[in-house]
Every structure is written in C-alpha cells, then in structure tokens.
Amino acid sequence: MSGYPATGGAARPSPGVHPGAERVNDPLRTAFAAVHGGRPEGIWAAPGRVNLIGEHTDYNDGFALPVALAQTTRLAARRRTDGRLRLHSAQAGGPVVDLAVADLAPGAVTTWAAYPAGVVWALGEAGHREVDDGADLHFDSTVPAGAGLSSSAALECAVARAYDDLYGLGLGPPALARIAQRAENAFAGVPCGVMDQMASSCCVAGAALHLDVRAGSHEHVPFGPGAAGLRLLIIDTRVTHDLGDGAYAALRTGCERACALLGLAALRDLSPDHLPRAERMLPARLRPLVRHVVTENARVAEAVAHLKAGRVAELGPILNSAHASLRDDYRISCAETDLAVDSAVAAGALGARITGGGFGGSVIALVAADRVEPMGAAVTAAFRGAGYREPHLIPVTAAPGARRIE
Ligand code: ADP
Ligand code: MG
Image 1 (cartoon, rainbow, N blue to C red):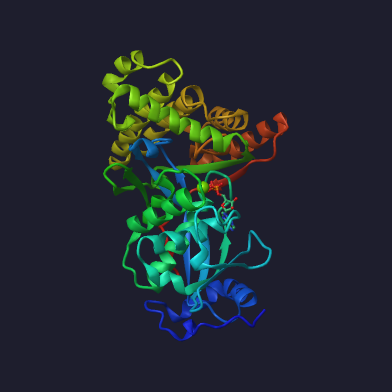
Image 2 (cartoon, protein in one colour):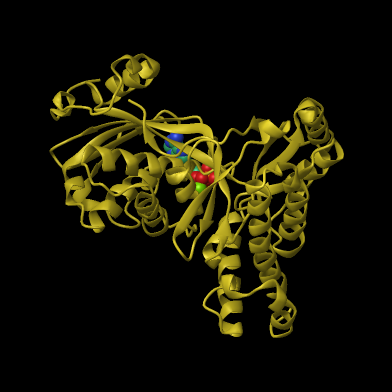
C-alpha cells in the first residue's frame, strides 16, 4: 500500500542505532511498508510483565515486585506533519485506524487503538504539543493479550518510549509510565494502578522492580532463579471471566470504603500489628479485603529481603500464602487458576500463585529446573482431566523495560 504522505521522517538521523541491527526486524519493516508505505524512523520494544508478589496493592499506595518479560510489543514508528495518527497492529489486523490527533478525547476511541492513541492524547495533555503533528505506527507483539501479562501496558509503553525518543522529550522511564497509566485510566477507561506501566517502562535485565507506589520510587532487586537451580514459569490458563472489569472496580471501591471508615489515606498506612484492631472496626465484608492488602504488602518486603540475600527459594512459601490470600480473602481466583496452582505444587513447585488482576489469566510457579517438565505435564494433565483448554507454559527471564532497538 502506498499513497500516504511520506513525512520526510526517513531522512532524519537515528542516533545510537547500530547499522547492522536492521536485519533483525526486517519483517516488521516490511509490514510497516505494506501498511503505511516507506520506512519507519525506528523500532521500539516494550515488554509484558509478570508480578512476583504485591497483587492489588498498587491502587492502595503500596508495594509490588514485577519482572519484565522477554515477550515484547514492537513498534515501528514514523512522524507525520498533517495531524493524522495512523495505527495498525498485526494482532488486531483490519484496516489502518486513521484518527485526527486534534479529535482525541476520552471515550472517542473504543477499540484496541484506545491504548496507543491514549498515550498520544496524554502526552499532548501534559503539554507536549509536538504530538499534534501525528504519526504512522505499526505494532507486532509476542505478549499474549488478556492473559494478565500486561499486553496493554506493553502497547502503551512502546508508544511513550518512541515519542520520547523521536521528539527528544527527555521524560525518562518513570514519567513515561505515568503518561501510559493516564492513557489507560482516562482515555481507555480502565482503572488500573501504575504497576504494569512502571514494570514495562522501568525494568532492567536480571532484576525485579521493587515499587513503592506512594513514594513514586523504585529500586532494582536482583532476580536470577537460574543461579539457584530454579525456574519461574508462567502458566497461562487462557481463560478470562467476564466479571473481571466490574469486580476489579468493586474491589477498589471496597478498599476506599475501608480507608474512609478507618480514617486512613490508604491501606498502605495500616501495619500488620494494627490489623486485628482495624478489622474490629469494619463491616464483615470489608475485613478480608483489608487483610489481603496489609499481609500482601508485608509479603513484598519479605520477598525483597530474601532476594537481596540471594535466597530465591524462600519465595516459594511466600507465593503459596499470597495465593491463599488472593483466593480466600480477596477472592479473585477461579477454578482454573486454583487448579493450576494446586497441580503445580502437587508436582513439586516450591510455590505458586495467581498473578495479575485475577478472574482467570495466569499463574506463576517457582520450580527446580529438573522439575519443570514433570510439573508442566502434571498441570496439563490436570487441565485435560477437568475439561479445560490446554494451558500455555511460558518461562520467565527478567528482561529490560521499554527501549529503542533500531
Ligand atoms: P492484558 O494487559 O493483561 O493483556 P488487557 O485487557 O488489559 O489485558 O489488555 C488487552 C487488550 O489490549 C486487548 O484486548 C487489545 O485491545 C489490546 N492489545 C494488547 N496487545 C495488542 C496488540 N499487539 N495489538 C492490538 N491490540 C492489543
Ligand atoms: Mg492490561
């Protein structure tokens, strides 16, 4: 396909790009040419993420410990000059989504394109009016969508990082993560916390990201299960239960209500020592929510201490208690994720838990390297026996965050 104005972007310099690197992403360049005509100015990649520990704590101003995945969303991008934002995705297929940057507004885009277009909108709202010129974007991703591995954040963070580089905005990873979160919250209408975008934007290879959401700070904590003869595996159950969205909002509202009753700014401010007293002050339906958030924040601190001391295997029991808390107190597990956890642990995993928002999605399991195959076979057999779809097993390598790759 051709006939779309080439914006002259191809002639601009591409600083820091290794000339020999181009071959690696030739298929992406070919796809870009077919969709938009001509050549992209560069290629960016942003990873999906898996959260080791600290679930449903981010919107309670608390702590989390995600790891970026080797699976990424790649973006070939080129600036335009006519104010059009033209988006295409290999996964979504279909024709190019052609939008006027000037018309971008919350609720105006209701398809997948809301996530990337939302980033352009959020950058503009933040005063970076360079984005008004428009762009040609083409995406291709290896992050499974809807599996609780943050394909949405990968999409957003790839765009944020590309714009930061193309326009020299100088925002840097944490600020880009906040732009991406604003896109998802305000533009796409998904009330997520900031963990997904921070992970996709700020992670470095070989480390988990210890996030303190209230402080807006993070530190990199070494995460190398391989050195301890261990592996971290994702078990993607490939189910998503529709009640997810409404239930997520209800959980957030429940946490806010508990804070109001306890006179706290956020559940982050409640220590485990004060939990019994707090529970006595709350209606029965809110107690388990508060219990999960408070104990989960403590589990993050415990996990970080173990990782810093090189005791990766100690994560196992922490994962198991986190799963019990998410299943019994926060109630975001389901039959498929419970079966994945139970069958993984029965087959020798040191620990396993549901990860991500819940109501389906993925489970993580920490397992000795020589137990990976038997565990995978046991989980698959258990799913077959229950009449579920075959789960996908994905090994985790702690990968870097959003970056320019060409
Ligand atoms: P998760 O972030 O856990 O994968 P979400 O429901 O938050 O799940 O985001 C999934 C949605 O993000 C998809 O339904 C789709 O709209 C969009 N999305 C993610 N990756 C892509 C992609 N490569 N191409 C087009 N849309 C995508
Ligand atoms: Mg998401």
